[in-house]
Length: 420
Image (cartoon, rainbow, N blue to C red; front, top):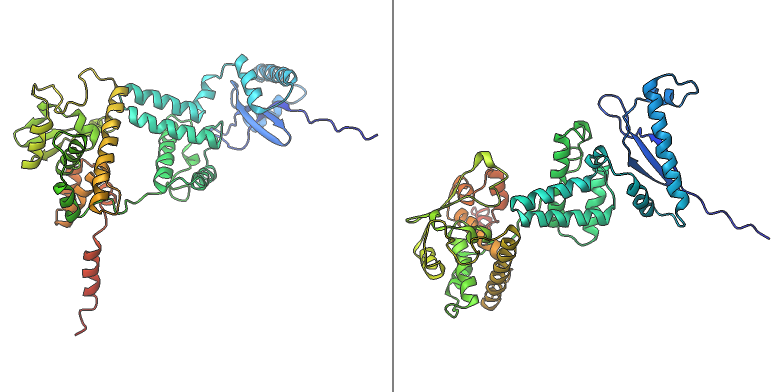
């Protein structure tokens, strides 16, 4: 009678992780768990060692007091891991981690090396600062990364890992823009780790000859003047939601492409005669040392929208539009801004379809149309950049839409001007 093959058993051991040498020539000690040829490494609260120190530690006659203490701690880690492994009726790495780390609080060093812990700290920081929307985007990025790899240490974020994650996102049908957002968020977290010394400069995985985050180009987001005129002439019932959506869309278009959050945050003290001056919420915390207000010159149309939808009591600290309560929390602000954005996209989008505009029209379209119409009218890119509140001309260049097809045809025809 054939013997039933024994089920392979998991093993655990503290090893010198020589996959990456640190700048001082040492390597970290890690708990390595092996099961059916799969291996996972876990950070432990032990000092880093050189290769000779590791070999000496495992020698027969160890007289170095420091190394003897380390060896004793290693035995404790291995013994505890073996106990957890024996108590598991069915081994999985997830079950081992749950039981093992329940008794071994992850130390400060291990937390510092954990990418997802760094993400969670960044999300908490953003939420505390009032950047609920950005915190939400980072949370979405974190969820995506966990779906790709449940546990992740900074040393595992290599150019190869980033390429595989890029392929994973693309294979899941994510757009280039989404891939770019997720990878830029991860890059921010990695940059923070690099600044803290968790990642050595030579281990940095982004940039030239490494992994480069894909840049999503804006394609045909702007409207032509003819299309903008059609929306302007579109008839709506005064005071209705479609009427408000159309007016707020035009307020954005006429006021330097101001986004919905900044519209909601405008206060009467920001308006002086025909000038509106405000700091973009998007850059208010990221560039504190270089705060430059966006200055808008009101037109008759934008002033009429202020008079039509603005609050009656024009006290300096009161909001211009009755969207946000004075005591609004960051989370509630995010919800109200999103509600207004969805409402604008819904009704203006319907108008565009009814008019016959064959491209999506959203709040983003108002901002892109503002910048692109200025470009086509001959405005200098420096003026457009300042009007948008950009701090870098390259950002503006990437933001601007391509020229209209009739302009391209005109230039193309010039190539044959030699023909009679």
